[in-house]
Each structure stands twice: as structure tokens, then as C-alpha cells.
Image (cartoon, rainbow, N blue to C red; front, side, top):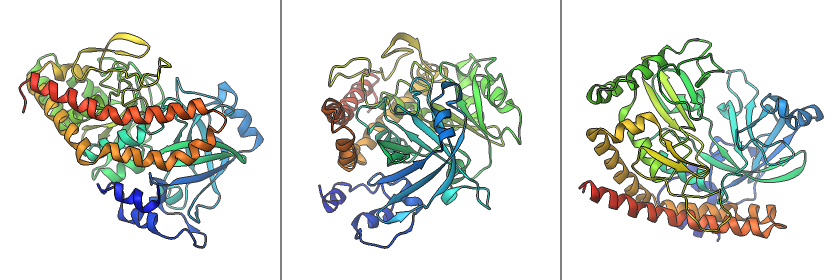
Length: 427
């Protein structure tokens, strides 16, 4: 597909005008500085050249030091524009998806701080995901796109073709990290803390434990200024109120309640079982402001759109119920889902709002032509995947099959939402 045809298919305006202009411009140009709009442009694949000294390579291949930041340099380039060599530190990322440098790991990268205290182009960090838990390679793009379309603070995504010490390591998705730079662009008030939830640890009494790097919630930001979890304690206390009416009213005090319920609706529409509202109670950030009010930030959206990674059967779909206290995940059955989600669906006013948000999410998927967008980015990344799996045709075929199935999942989910709304007599 040529660039003009690709442009015509993307009629929903999900890219900034400067990016669209870049698509139509001539590739013949002198080398110029990279722009921030290049970093998260889903219609381009950046070349990322990572240079690591021997000591860093050894550290990233040693399981004892996987999460220790080590030095290196990074050059990003696309269409004749380049970042030049940037000093960075880098470590591996993941839990069940943790792999050594010699395999297909994901990375967290920190740029060297400049005079303003920020890094390259104002970015402190990059997160590069190796896509090992997403056979389609397009789930994170589609999921975050839908979250953002629904007005939920969520990451942007881009693509890189990663080279490590000159060796082509294939396609990575570049996911915007929900850090203080992210928060400053999306919120007008001051960020107090950014907490990252630990899998299976819920908002229950006693889970305000630990310090910045320990306990049920890890403080990714804010600990130096506010070295306590008093805001989290307040949230947990309100979340633990067993009287439905006061619990629901109390959520207004400690959360952006409307966005929280909306986020649950998007997670469930996407089949995001590895989320807070899913059975793993995982992959989310909680951002508090200085008034101790929290906003929910989604994360870790690779295992979405119904992909069933437990089996090798092409085209099979894993089903996450849209409305249930318990749910399966591919490797475990009948687990309790996130406490706030369960309380919500068991209290009629909250459940009704959740169902209305599901209706809105389903309509938004049509409005932004989510399936067409996912097909478009599939075409963008196809040359990289074809080269990456030139000697592994089965994996390339699987990617194509999962792309097709993932896009078809959208209409399937819309039909399920329609049936659920009819069951509860919501028009």
C-alpha cells in the first residue's frame, strides 16, 4: 500500500497534522534533528541503534542484575532525521515476560538529564516492549488508541526497529511511560505520587504497606517530596467502606470516579484480563494529586483483543466476561477480579454507569474506525516483520492470523455489549 492510500484509510484524525504532513513529504532531505512527533508516530518505524559496552552486556545477561540500570548510547532516526548519539542508562523490563539480552527482552531506558533536568526532547524515559506476549504485534497500539479516544489518560505508541551493537533485533513497540513528564502533559494540577500496582494486590486494608520500592503499591514518583503513603491509606479506607451508598459517594472524594468506571469499561471491552478489573488485578498506575485524589492510568495492554496464548490453535479467542465477580485467565480459573470493579457491578447506580460506558466504548470503536487503524499499522510494520521472521514463516503466519482475528474481535465484542445492554434494558 502506498503512502497516499494509507492516508486515505486513516480518516479519523488520530494523528497530529504535523505527522500527516510528514507522511506525504518527500524522503529526500538533509539530515535534521528528530522531532517529538517522530517518537510516537504509529505510521513510521524508527531505527533505534543501541550501543552497549561489554560490561553492560554482561549485566543484562545476568539474572541477578536484569533490573540494574547500565550505561549505553542510543541513536534514533527516521526519514533523514536523527537524534544523534544520546547517553542513556538501560535495564530489562517484565515479570513473566522477563528475558535476557540474548533473547527478546523488553527495556526501560533513561535519558541523561539536560540543563532543564529533563532528557532528550523533554523525555526522561522510553519503554520498548519486545512483543513476545502479543502474537499480532498490534494490541498495544489498538488498546491505547481506544483508551485515549475515550478521554482516559493513556500512553501513546510508536514503533522502532532495534539494533543492538549492530545486530538487527527486529520490531519493538515504543510505549510512552506514565511518568512525571506524562502527567505534566495531561494534568493541570500537581502530581503527588505515581503508584504502580503489584499483581494480585488489591486496594484492601493493610496494603498501604512498605516504602517507595516495596509493599503492595510501588511509588514510581513523589517519594522524595512526600515519603509516605498517606494518600493511598485514604483511598484504601474509602474503598473498604462496605455500605454501598457511602462507598459510591466516597469514591468522588478520593478518585476521578467517572474516569475510573470508564477505564473499567474500556478494559473489559478489550478483554484486558491482565488489568485491575481482570482476574490478575495487574497492570495499572494510580496517580494522586496534592489533594489526595487519584486518577487511574491503564498499562500493560499486550494481552488484549481476546488472544489465547495458552494454546497453539490459530484463531481461538479467550473470553473475558463483561460483567462478573470472578473470571478465568488463560492459565488459572475462577479468580476474583479487582475489588472496586466488583463493588461497582454489584451496586445498581455504579453498574448502570458502567453499562452506559460500555455502550460509549463500543460506539467509539466504530467512530474512530479502530479496525481500519489496526489494519493500517499492520501494513506499516509488515516489512520489518517479514525481515525479522524470514526464516520463521510459522511465526509470520501466526502474526497475520492474529492481526485478522484481533480486528474481527472488535465486532464480536460490540455484539456482546449490545446483548448485555438489552439484558439490563439499557437503550
